[in-house]
Length: 243
Image (cartoon, rainbow, N blue to C red; front, side):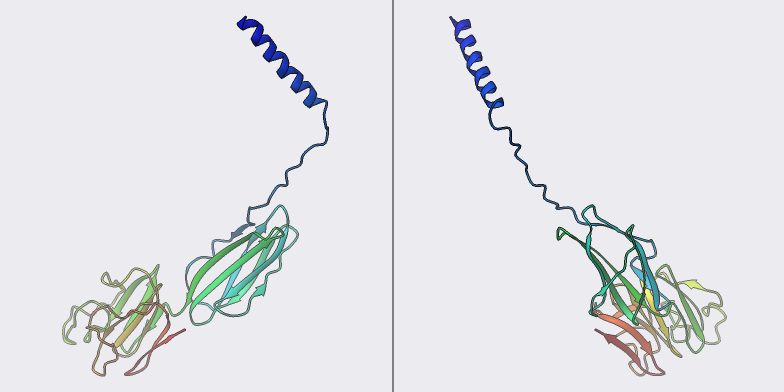
């Protein structure tokens, strides 16, 4: 009895399948939605950091199976510029930086409206500075300093008498109490300024005229403004610009 019932069920299922197969032969096509943004690759030179030259090269390749609708770059808040690409999607453009902080944004949009962005921040500033009798250089974000230190202007964290034989380094010395992400440095006769990747300013040295701000004769932060983009020093004055 159970076997007979099972046989009947199988027969019905077979009939349904056969009728379905003999029905409408039209294929139902499901539209494929492109939700993948373009592939954007840039050369290693396009990276966050600092530059001692105003002209930087931005190059790489942009690709998309459905084609690129637009490809642009923007420097800070300036108008958007169109980037030219060849048949294989390669591009190369020279971007001229402004002093201080520069944000460069690449934006590629495909024909389906998908967008890919790549943003880098590059600081244009001085990586070598010389004061009245002290000098410094930045290497990989670290501060190296040497020379006279009677006002603590080399950043050693102490002052040294002129008559002391020690304490006035005559070769580059790594300043360990300085930040490790400095991007620009500026010296005057007896005081010094530097700025890091986050726009934070540091000062040290002589402060007779308040040129350091609320600082001591060591490398310490005196202004905590992420918008500071450029520093400079005059004989008895320090100057900061922001935007």
